[in-house]
Image 1 (cartoon, helix red, strand yellow):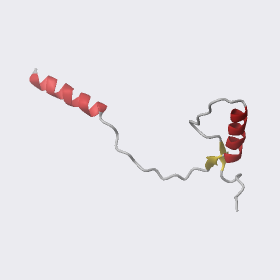
Image 2 (tube, one colour):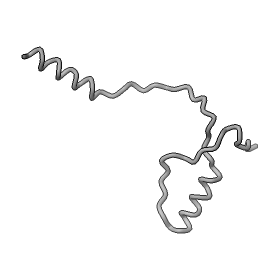
Image 3 (cartoon, one colour):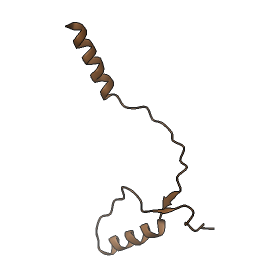
Image 4 (tube, helix red, strand yellow):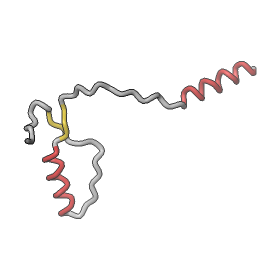
Length: 68
């Protein structure tokens, strides 16, 4: 009985522990569309609405114009 309780307790602790952070190789071809974000933010400010970004609107990296 004690063995079962110990094993179930250990499995609960293991299940609730956080996963170690991993750095991923970001080879994504997508980038944030800053021009679109600026237009949306300006519209929200004009309408006096609160805007919070969760994800940015994306464009393909090969379609993005380089800003120099």
